[in-house]
Length: 354
Ligand code: HPA
Ligand code: ZN
Image (cartoon, rainbow, N blue to C red):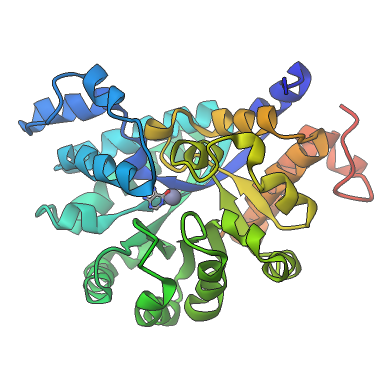
């Protein structure tokens, strides 16, 4: 399907929120090489091109192996700052106005990098992004699910002195064989601490992992969640309870979750009333940032103007912004799609006339 030029332009220009991006997944090969040189880290690749050509993934694990190797060049606060600032500039150019960004402290602390270095470097860049680009953001600390719950507890403990710098916890890395219940107690502890809760589920794992993330971990959003489509009762529940699925089209294509995006479940999920949102996951590895992900989805699937409007709204609705800030961003979306707020259509799902 070819994407209508006017719709393509509206997709690029609409204000949007990014709710599923791993900051380590924004590390471009050029920056990996620059940081390797700066830090005298030896890479098992001779050149940027050789590294890029290794990005031929067969599944989630084949990606994770390279993703963790790429992150090995991150050692100083300045490295984390540079990576984060480069991401913000790319996202802002795609009209991302707000981002809730994952970081994987265990990937760094296991190499002897202090968690303070990680958090300070990222958070300093985000503070500058707010001043310089009016780009708002917050951080979500992800536990690596291939490691033990004990390790996750130690990570949460080590992060507590920086409690004001992150708003929630998430769960990422190898899904199969690492079900949500493995992290039941550490999520309960995070909940007691008043942190927001999200988890990757139903990317390579089954629909049951999505249900379990909701019932056992008590998460508020599901990252990926596309396998929910296999369980009609679960799809109805996600719609009824307004639980967002943060879907990443290019990631799903590159990791062979949906090798052909024309088979992707996102249109069916949207039509069933599930609050789907669109994001970039690990844009340096999967071939594109926010707008590239939106465009890939709209090129492959019979998505309409009304869907684009809904996806833009959903991205802010599903965010963890305080109500007043959320309302401000939703008003920006309304102005973009429907003119001034006083001309809101009675039915928010009505297709825009633009
Ligand atoms: N899935 C699981 N873990 C991850 C991903 C992903 O898509 N990206 C970075 N870590
Ligand atoms: Zn992810």
